[in-house]
Length: 276
Image (cartoon, rainbow, N blue to C red; front, top):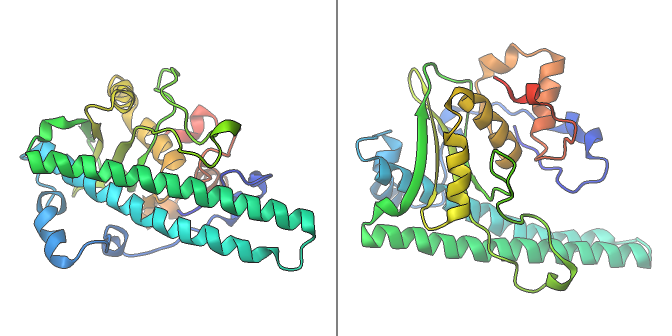
């Protein structure tokens, strides 16, 4: 499911426009940001689901997911500049507002790209030092294969107990177009195997806020499938479902899925919405 209606006024009217696309599992799980040689060399344990060296496996997951986020952020920066072309024929006030919004989005995405570059360098440093214990993580292997999958990076604003971790997606006036405050990042993944799903979270151990978020989830193993599902739908741009599962959903549950994919704009989300 793909959809991003963050900061769109009246976003609830757009829930039903979220697209459900059917694609092959190979295409869904492949990121073409690396050449074939380096992709095979650097991610062999990840691609084989080889958990014999779990810190190395999670380093590969974290690095590839962060590289993918950087790739998407580069596209977002380019797209923000294209928005400026939309002011043709608008009044002066509308042109000024649109140009400001384009500048603001370009700045936000550029700052996000800068932070991702710094994060990638830190993750690369872990590999160069062969100190994979610098990766903090938790993981669960479910008893059955869950009908969803996905992987991505995000910056948690709160721990699961409601305690505030960091300020995310909020810019104070005096900070505008300056240097955005750094945030800490968590990588989250639901990876299907033949008969189960691997649910894992990882971050740099030195990022204590990200680590606290991971620990808050690890403390509730009895709710892990529901927590992962809800967090992924609200924090990661692309989530994949098995077509057979989607075909079992009536109009109501399908509408809920689309609403959850709107990245937190669905202000009326209930706990029952994120149970699997």
